[in-house]
Length: 75
Length: 159
Image 1 (cartoon, rainbow over the protein chains, first blue to last red):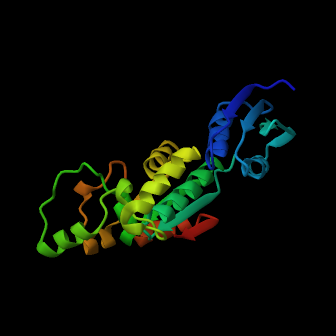
Image 2: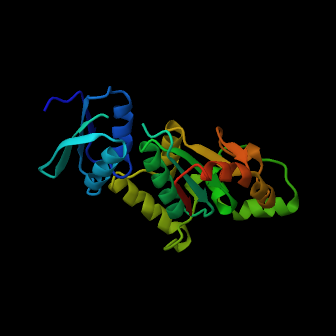
Image 3: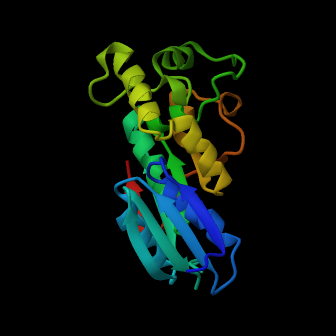
């Protein structure tokens, strides 16, 4: 999947993954894809709920070598 | 996006752990696009003191209060396991170890995210705290302003 922007939030703990995602999302246009990488254990649930609340679409998520990856399409 | 959502937090407590929790929730809510207000009253006010503020002339009672209260976010005690100040040092260590954020960093992030930090003027008077001792960028108000924000918000917490 082609990402418009990638946020590397690996190693960052709560609440930074969603704070960084929000800051990056603010700079994108509707329909753009934001890719987020995290390692915080709670961040998976956090990002899914965050995307849902903003009306964004979680296109894909996967867990590779303890890194959570998300592709979120901006509403 | 979510302009109509809001979160308000009354920060009544002045302990490191409780204040840290309040700022983490506030910053998370700001990331959700909420309009966030943190209303600091009683012991919570000590969080917003400027460590390097010059001495302010005060009456005896106010000076006594000043001696007994922490001066700024780096001087807060823990609500549990404080061990006469050893606990907060231990917490600073684990915060670093887990790449979490310290209270001063969380305050800076809150300012970046446009969180409204409100100091309660009535309790500032009670505790003998002057504006000159506080950080820059604060709003000074009372319960009237807080309720004004709270009635528009859908998450209202008291910590």
